[in-house]
Amino acid sequence: MNQWLDRLEKEGNLRIIEEPCDVNLEIAHAAYIEVKKSDSKVLLFKRPVNREKGIEYDMPVVMNMFANFKITEEIFGRHPDAIAAEIGELMHMKPPQGFKEKLSLLPKLFALKNVFPKRLKHRGLCQQIVKTLPDADLNELPILKTWSEDGGPFVTMGQVYTKSIDGKMQNLGMYRLQQYDEKRLGMHWQIHKDASHFFDQYKEAGIKMPVTVAIGGDPLYIWCGQAPLPYGMFELLLYGFVRNEPARLVKSITNDIWIPEDADIVIEGEVDPEELMIEGPFGDHTGYYTLKEPYPVMHVTAITMKKEPVYQATVVGKPPLEDKFMGWGTERIFLPLLQTTAPDLIDYHMPENGVFHNLIMAKMETHYKGHAKQFMHAFWGVGQMSFVKHAIFVGKDSPKLTDYGAVSEYILNRVDVSRLLVSEGIVDALDHSSPEALVGGKLGLDCTGEEIEEGVASTIGDEALLEAMQTIDSNVVALKQYFTHTKTPVCIMAYRKERCVHRLFDDIGGLHEHIRLLIVVDAENNDIENPYMLVWRVANNIDAQRDLRKEPFIMLDATNKNSLDGYDREWPGDVMCDPEVLESLKRRGVIDYDRELLEKFYI
Image 1 (cartoon, rainbow, N blue to C red):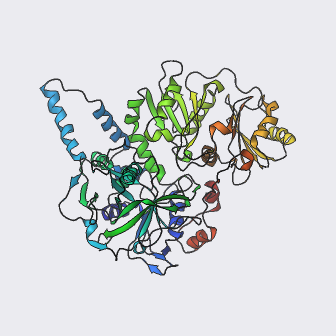
Image 2: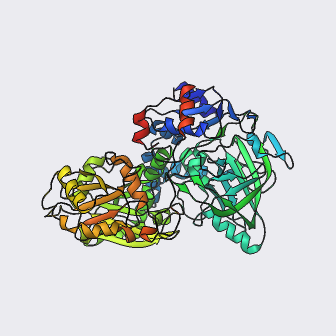
């Protein structure tokens, strides 16, 4: 970590903040503002404090380690596409023909030895300071409270190391960890995570589960922790492949979990499978709060660290955030692995304002009728891709998937109701839109092939269309049409919701000549002039089985759901920065922002 910070400072990519900043909201708010800027940097808070508890911490806090594309590429050591090419080459490796080919293969095979972690016999840098019970105290760490309505402070960049009960598999995951007190952390591993599968093994056996959490060290560790590897594959194998040198591991002091020897801070403990505590709320990467739910509890048995540790944390909320850059690396590197399941996949992209699992675009080569729908089923059946809610497939002749304007035109000229696929499947535990937790609607859109022959019959201007809508329902507040030059203009409507939106849909069918695709959002907390955040809102808020109407034109209800819709779960609120905290940080020179930035990203 210190080597990375030195490098970042020399390159002008590190901003050092000497002003004392509070672990309650201030540090996270400052990082939240910074990462939304086009020239965002890594932030090092030299003097973190907790004014409520009267603590001045003796270790700095680093935020936004993955601050931009350039820094992320430096962390990988090369462009993620180069790593993907190496993976693809290995996956298509054929037996060598002749002595010369055998010789050329040797360096590649020799390099693979670096994939396997190396277990050291001595203690690591992370164990220069060792505190076991009763001295181990989580309050000595500058654990952050990110949002005003969070249930408490959370470890947000914890590398959570676990192992199967038979010791044959080890896992590295990235889960948020709520601090309950000086000795306990909540373990927010969702049911589809490897650590949760291991937990079930210990619960069935009736014995406590060892867990070790590492913080800091090489920034690549934490990226590996969120990588979508197959069940049972240790994520530090990926570290060795990317670094071309093995991860160096040391054994924990109070359990037999192995962790990187250069971590800055290590929290060791055990989880009693019979004990659950309420965890949350927490402002998560969806931009909404996830609600209170029972999760396992880790009892701390030891805390170890370097002599001069750095506490690494992140902030999650509304896009864009540093997970944009982490997700970019994941997206590029894992393309060859996806292509093993879908060989005709050319490329794919997960826009950060689609919150990754809520929206994916894929470019493919089609060979027969229904090929794209076959792809949809394949995507929804593969690992973490199974959590994708909305998938749009385009042909090999489409523009680059990151050219949003051009690819949107391509898609809208090919929207055909008969090529929509609505399905049901597993959704992410953080999804709030589905009628029940963990299961919800999925939408696939086949936009491969030629443009459709007939588009909207007769477009009219925004004012005329708004007047027609308000004649039907006076709660229609505003309206804007995008891409009116395409076969399928997108009509966004802001609605003051006093009845189920489907009743509105019943009433406006007569406007079918002027509309081909309508999306309704709440008038409150939405700006219909802001397409970036509208994508974020719509991808979050719809469940395709409930909220999509296909006739007489495509209609989507992206409003917040409540009893009017038969929705009986608790609908979470948006994460919002505390205005007083922002103003204080600005006044003290910690951050700078203008009203435009706050409005652009619904801050």
